[in-house]
Image (cartoon, rainbow, N blue to C red; front, side, top):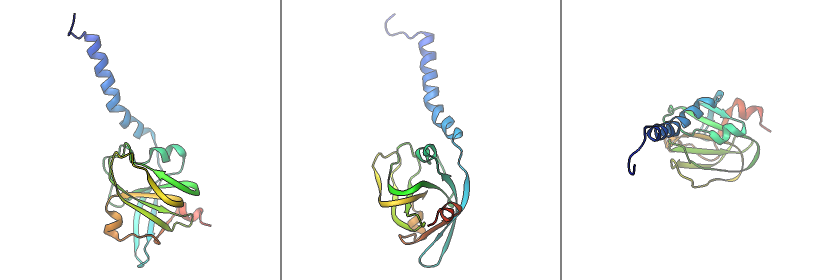
Length: 162
């Protein structure tokens, strides 16, 4: 029967489509992140307050903020790589445009990538050794005048400070 679809073929196609749509939502629900307050101390003396999720394991760092559709203005995620090293990241499967704040083992911001493009496979380089990356909504660094030399202060950065 050329050109006709059986009920079983339609059912199979529907189920495949369902799993493609449902998988990202299910995966996000399975990944759990602890939260902590984070302050950015600017060189101008301002204290900028955020609540960040902590990505400390390999799986958490790999998953990050993928598939998120919204994030509060004062929210973000801190990636703790455990040791200082050169870090590369990308935005594949990340819906939100982000600013990335790269910081050394003392929490000092060394480099900022503003307005990272959603869904991009462009490699975003830390431009040197870092231990932490904080992701916040795109435009936050510009709006709050966050610059290299400013410092991240949180339970994560202070317990690991050298």
